[in-house]
Length: 587
Image 1 (cartoon, rainbow, N blue to C red):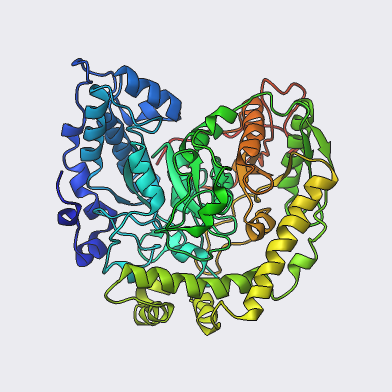
Image 2 (cartoon, one colour):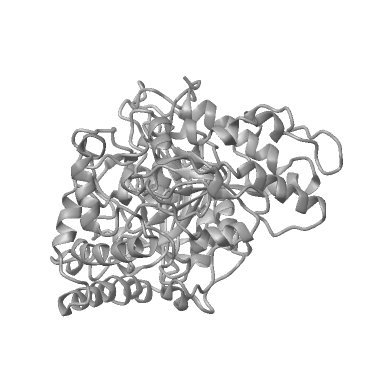
């Protein structure tokens, strides 16, 4: 295979032409991508339109690949076609920042292995997109959405990328994100980066995709990939998943390696997966786990991780489960529409045999709001952890946070048109993170959020999990003032480093809403069981509608429904009528 270094475009070229130029080598040979299957006959997918893969699960792809009815090269071809038609043109979602020029060649290698009877596992030949803060040592950049890091490329794959390659996945490309994972300025528009511009919500193009894993969520929702990796420090996986009508698994800190991932916080950062179904996300998660010498936090996962999380998919898991509803920490009450759908979700859970303990309040909720708190901890860690990453990366221009601040000042025209870098400035002013003040703050937050918070309420009520709305309906894209924030449920789990699973819950005015299942450290398997049972009973995933206008003219508000949940209806709308979202053609 061609040396990846030889395929790299120059910095000047990439900045001039964006994804179109970077992707050219991947799409120019499109006709060569479709090929006969390994049995020698023409696959039904060989000349199929890209609509053939819409809403196709990873399990369905796996079956088609193994039977020879589909090749990995055809799959890559169809996803590139969708990216061209939907992401770069048509609705112009702008979620895919760069395509991998080696994707077709990698897919061909995976096809050859399958033809020889060699399979690496469930992800063999499956295309995967990566958030652009995850290192790849290939023909792509890793920039966190910033123009500042386009003078270099990483010398080594992130550990999670190496694991995906070993599992046979095809790295299809990089996705746009809120620049620097939304840790640069206070008025950021989620889904905007200096390198990639603004990503748009596929359900309503004038609405925010949330973030910071914006492009990953949008790409999965719009069927530009079946699986994408994102990262979360506080809400950056589960929030965009909910806003874009998909599933996200945010793992316990230490279950997946952060080595080779542009950091914010060693205490809170984690790499997770996004899929359209719990099954797809669970299938991908198993390929990422394991102790990694490059990330000491993964030592905590020894004996507590699994390489196959699909074994925990149990449609009957809610029968007899005890689930708590925290009310005192701002989990509910910030959005009437979200609350209405959430109450229907609680009814659905009861109908499925779960015992709902409501309220199940977090005992440390008020203490966790004290200052200094979580934001101050992140500022200490961001400066330390980012400088360590940059030192290892050896970029010729950017070696420290101070260098980034200076770069942004020089490139205000491209980087600070819409929002500034106040968070960068505050973090740079912080002293080193090995001070007693930081150590005391870190210990207090971890203890209050974990053992004295989530763990305490789980034990008090003998609960299997806690649940809450993930986020409210998507706000309008506002490059002038930044995103509007009403409320979310990810904060306490973020401070504790505990896992979350977000699943589609319903719709408000045609905009997706999600429900989050949360638990103690390394309880992913339990959360997957419960989330899967809810998903299978309610089936609230709906393909995007690509509407230009965000508000449905009839004011419809649709809720939890499904054939397995008799008696569960839809929430009353302002006009007193019920309806479901209507799909509109792509522009």
